[in-house]
Every structure is written in C-alpha cells, then in structure tokens.
Image (cartoon, rainbow, N blue to C red; front, side, top):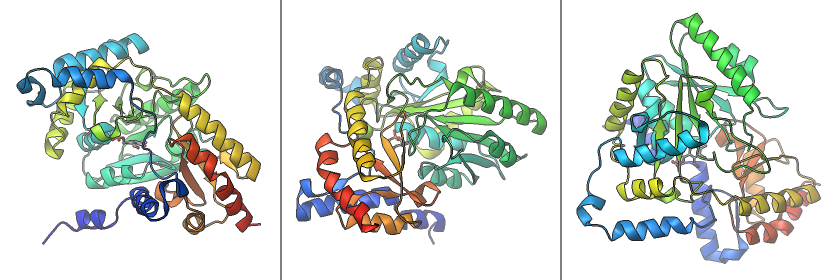
Length: 393
Ligand code: PLP
C-alpha cells in the first residue's frame, strides 16, 4: 500500500535528530543550562552582519522578483557570482554553467548520487561517515560500500579503497573537513586517491567519480588549508552549502559544482538537472540565492569554534579521554569508555551529556561531540565529563 523503504526511513528517524529532540524536551523539563547538548551541528556563531543587511535590501525589492521562481538550476547572476569567487580562490575558470543551486549540501549530494546511479552501482564511503549518505545512496537504488579510514591518522586508506573498487563502483564520497572525525585530507592523500581512481577507471572502462562533500570547507584551525579536489581529479562533483560557513543551516542553500573537465560534461550536468527535477530540488530558495551571492566572499567566523575546540580538548585531557585532534569542522571524536557506544551514550545521558554514539556513523566504540555550542555549555559540562569518567574507574 505504501513504499516500505520510505516507511522504514520515516519510522527510524536519525539518531542525531532523536537525541536533539530529547535534549529540547529535557531542557524544558530541568532547565536550559542543566543539559549539555553536543548532539547536532547547529552553528552557535551568528551569521555575518552582511547576511542581515542583504536580507533587508532584498526584502525591500519588488515582491515579484524576490518571491518568484528562478530557473531550476538557480539565478544565472548568482551562479556567476559564485563561480567568480571560486575562480579567485582556486585559480579555476568556472562559469554559471558549472553550478546547480540546491537546498543545502544535502540537496546537492542527493542529486549528485541520483544523477550518477545506474542499476547495480556501488558507492564507496569512508567510515566513519555522515549517516545520511546511506539514505541517499539506498534511495537511489545503489549499494553503500563502507571502507574504514586509516586509524593511525584518519586519512583515506588507499589500499583498502583499492580492494573495495570493482566494475560496479560508480563513485567515492569524501568529506573534508570531516564530520565526525575533523580530519582534513592532505594533498598527498588526494593525489593517491586520484591516481587510484584514474587507474581503476581505465581498468573498468568507465569513469569513477569523486563526490566531494564540503559544507565545512571554511572551518579549519591554525594553518590548515583544504585542497581543492577538482584540481587533483577531473571527475569530481563538489557539494557545498553555506549552512556552516555562514551559519545558515535552516535556510537550505548550497550548490553542486560540475567542472567542464568531467567526462561527458554536457550529459552529466543535464543528468544533475534531471535528478534535481526528479527529487524536487529545483529553484533553490531565491532570497537565499541572493544572500549567498552577496556574501560569497564573507569569511567564516572560526574564532569561536577554535576557542571551543581548545576548551573541550582541555577538559578531555584533564579527565583522560582519548580523542582525535580536529583540524577542521566542529566535532570531536572521542573513544567511548566501553565497547558499546550506545550504552556509553546512555550512561552519559545520566549526567545530562548528549553525545552521539558512533554506530550511526558506521563504526563501533566512539562518540561524537558537536562543539558548535555556546562556550558556556562546554565550561559548565566539565564536572559532568569528570563524573562520567569516574563511572568507569
Ligand atoms: N554533509 C555533512 C558531512 C554534514 O555534516 C551535513 C550537515 O550537517 C551535510 C552534508 C548536510 O548539510 P546541509 O545542512 O547544508 O544540507
């Protein structure tokens, strides 16, 4: 009577959102400041002033232009402004024709996967991985193939990827800066991946794409830089959003970028438009298309996340937790104090600490702490982290 796969998805809400909802209810029950919610990637840093200024000026323009449909792929002027910004930063030659505006990075990923999918396709993800990849991959009829990142430094494990690639492999999704481990893939890693995929594409007689998921591109610490993936490998689709860099996750604005150099550019871009149409991701929110174009060169305010990273890792060090030092994004990947991460997260809940168990990310034994929270949440959580550690001593 109804689609069973969709029913299953709807009945099994994401564990991150479930924990977030629990946190809201718990805060209403015992007080906002008594719950230490590290569950979701909702930026606490306010959007830059220019976002508000642009909104005000766009809202004052004639209603028809502001609220009307844009072309399915987005306004040409907006796509040109984004292309020009990328060209300034990465020395590329993109134009509006390389961009498709979407509802967040999620929209870009869903249509990129759908555009590439053919029967029996496999898509490789590197574990731990953002849980929604499974939803988009399986909804497109593809098979998700998990490949663990190297545990020594969480860079890509090229040998393991080589072993996983076969004639069905259509794409590899990479996410850098990474949610949940905070790693930024190095140039050396990307070079090795590009070489592997070039050789494999030749061996199997069809392109193998990189889908570069980059909503955290601007959120990096110290002197870390994020290499531009298409300059390492031509068959790359970049999925981006302003959800994190401009703190606009609720506004659903981002893009998919397809460089001219990809194999069969015209067909791939057309398939992307077709996937947008099939999934209903046409004409991304127009007011925020304007905002994105106006704010395309606004720097992300990383200082608050850098302070939070310091404060949280200091607490972890003091208590003796094992964690991965993040180079970017705003998550801390912490070793659970028992093998069952769900059980550990439940114990943490008793101290009002909301931590996401690693099972959602395809691995066991860790938890993710989103530190895009107010600094006071981290400072006030210190005794709870201490008490949680003591539970296991
Ligand atoms: N990819 C990763 C790794 C994410 O962490 C997120 C959101 O948290 C997304 C994609 C989706 O981003 P958006 O909110 O722009 O759709």
